[in-house]
Image (cartoon, rainbow, N blue to C red; front, top):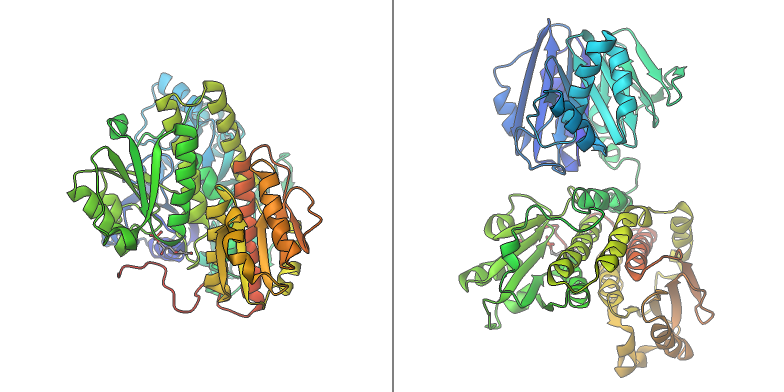
Length: 604
Ligand code: F6R
């Protein structure tokens, strides 16, 4: 996701900013930029793609003596990953970098345009710098103008702004997005959106709190809190281990990525969910013309997301939907019809089997769509259309947040198609949109839930197998839960449709067979419950995941009462992810790099 750095001092500012951005590389980005103000002159550079492109562009540029500088790595959310949309954004004599979302940017932008301001980018960020310069004209004082600007912004942000109006300061504000300032004995000041870029440079750091704003110069750190009361910085010693800093305090990348799901889902929804409908500006309506079937093709976790999609497409949009495992599909001489939209789903966009099926579909003349987390990947380049998941870089080999964004996209796409096909009433669509908007909050990890799962996990370190069971879309979730557990605990686990257990697998039931039962309130509850009762009667050990108490369970993980089964799906997704994580931790396994696995499978 996006990253911010800033520096005030005498050293080579350009090098320090670029080095800082490099430390943020692990978060993923599609463009980067810096702005340096020294001796009354601004120098700014931006480049898309890898940091090396920015390094190349700044090769000739050197800073000598005192300078202030800001830098940014961007993961596109508002507007495409172009150089114009890359930060820093410029006004007449100021530059800004920003993480987060300015929710009221459209209104601010409209007002500024009406007043004659020209915008260069499609981002929400650019309004900040223009609003600041507008305020500067009336306040005549940079800090007052900055303060006024912050009060006019709604949303989440971490902001750094530099301006010729006060050349030796960096103005900052933080609300909902992380930001810290670091110091050292040489009287240098470093800003960043996480610890990693500061390690080795700063010795002590102050983590800003929500609502904090102010400015930093070579001699001062001035902070005001959300009530406009001045406060002293609160310094803590900075950690010295870079890898642990990249994990933002979490024990593993997988854990961090589970916790990030709320944010990445919010990013995935951004600009795509209005009051009335789902919008995909990246899709041309003609993509669906003449289509009477959707075929989804993927591997592993992405295949589970595809399976979930097939239920939603048929239920909400009444489009026939079939799902294929890519490694099977490519060799079974499938019959392909031009009335079929071929959809590939891939976190990496490089999985060899999935890529091959995309090529087959293209060669057969089918229309193709990629759901992918990596812009410019092979699948994105090849498909006719792409919807980008906005999960940010996923480091843990076991996929978590990518799956969350894939299913979010499929839920949105099913509503988009329902509207197009007139298969849901407007009222029903609006109800679904309201649920979608509730999603980021629903997947926020509750401390009490995590603690409970940590405690429970000690009972599930042995046994002769796990069955994750569920019905309807909770069946693909059961598959996904079982895959997560297999991958990182090395325990045998299967995902099964609840109603299918009695057709064979129930023969395995005994106290050493662990059943992880997904029991949502709002989808086939009674039916699923009676399937679990059958297993309980045969003495399988049952761990029920449900908002409703279940007296036949040995263990019970209580989820929240939700309005709809989709929200229950996402909350239970977090539960099964955490359960696998905690079992793996107790077994002493390498959670982020499980044995025998690679993050991207580019071979057959
Ligand atoms: C499981 C996992 C894998 C991938 C699969 C496909 O946690 O990550 O099963 O989902 O290898 O990868 P992508 O989605 O990159 O095509």
